[in-house]
Image (cartoon, rainbow, N blue to C red; front, side):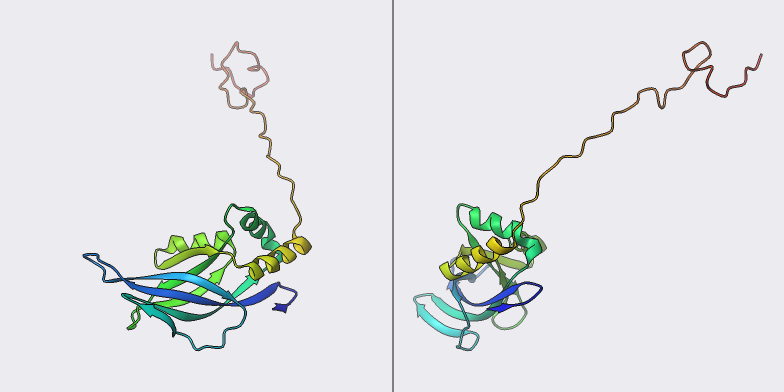
Length: 179
């Protein structure tokens, strides 16, 4: 784990699964299935296990980053019913058809990737060491901001009214009487 003025970083290994499926338009499915906290020593796309119709790979390493300005979203993630780490996979044109784009613990960042339509975003349970790291970071950097709602200016119904002769306020207007 590195500490800098901008934030903190932690490396994780991402495990993905390639599974054959019975579907008329698709022969297989890729899915992130696990995150391993810490540095990984195996090469990307190392086979970790296989069975009838499936293969699990260590897709590679991803760097998690925490920034003080984003503590509110980290706290939201930690306080949710199921704290998560989000793995982002992207379709490619190579033989495998997929690559590891990264991982994040920021729910807002995961939504941004999901909105592109090109990325597959999987929410996985937050591993204990990652959770402890996030909790320590949030404890140091989180500042709760008071929420306030802006009050609207009160409208003046007379402000845009058209005044005619004989109407209150007409005499104050700069009108010429054409008789």
